[in-house]
Image 1 (cartoon, helix red, strand yellow):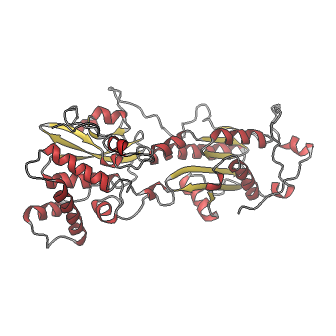
Image 2 (cartoon, rainbow, N blue to C red; image 1 turned 90 degrees about the vertical axis):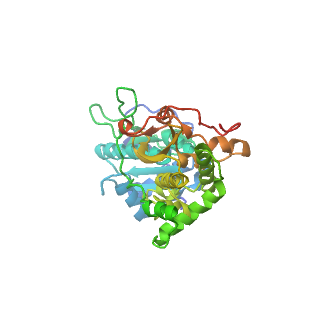
Image 3 (tube, rainbow, N blue to C red; image 1 turned 45 degrees about the vertical axis):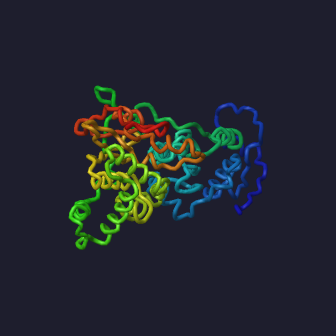
Length: 414
């Protein structure tokens, strides 16, 4: 239970000393009136202001405060605000796969407020790449968020942004608070709108937040070919055992390459639907869990990020004899590492993104599940470009064929 703060009415002289020089409009609700003791304590003041914002949210009880240690880590290591450049601070979040987050910094001069707000805006925009493709609803929540500056620096990523902004305008009207906008002539805090090449395609600039080197499956493929598994490492043996299970279930004699690809894709996506390592969305654990980049993490431990899904799909295609490559690229205007696959069927290339096909989505029914899990199945390169994928266009095959595309409805092509 949060500490209750008893508000006393400030004198008119105190309000006048805190007010903006601009003429104040009549309020529909009374502004908050912290006691003189609270005014002297920036930490209590930050808590007071953030509680006021949380009270405007119907889901305000879902948020939890960060401990002082975690809060300071967020401020310096996640937001990138220089240590000691704020007087008081409070940050409330909901969870690592929930984008809702509210932060308030007070005790700032104008330069500190501008710098802190700029850092928050950079964080907010980069946060979109954490969820883009994987959790579209959360990405949209971040995109609707706002950053304010003035006497405070405020980050608002919340369900009811309008209510939050209204309460800031009404109950914190004695403060000077306005939307953050970069000053004229200053660099943008985050280059969210990438430049494009002469074809109008967004430029690829590898983010390199993760080591995107694909897992070496040479030993596994050799053991599959020769039947000699004695020299495999414990990890590779476990990977091969899971692959054998998939191949036994999905592959039948006489199948075409397309039928093999479709069955193995569906086995992978359905078996590991919603198994994306969500801990990478927690700024406290940005690298996530061990082995989340390779097939062992996904097939054996049951979690992985894009490179785990992609290298697993690649390995399954290799073992099934279907020509396949792995594309290491990016998403969110090259702000987030991403990877997917391409398969060659009857001499033509197709793009497949098993990670985003396996992304969890609330409310799916039996009828809508299949289309959702085939959104990025055997699509063209142009489709990938239009759906937030960037890569080295000059050195990756261009997929233009549509014959073996299947959107999960009707009968698959033959």
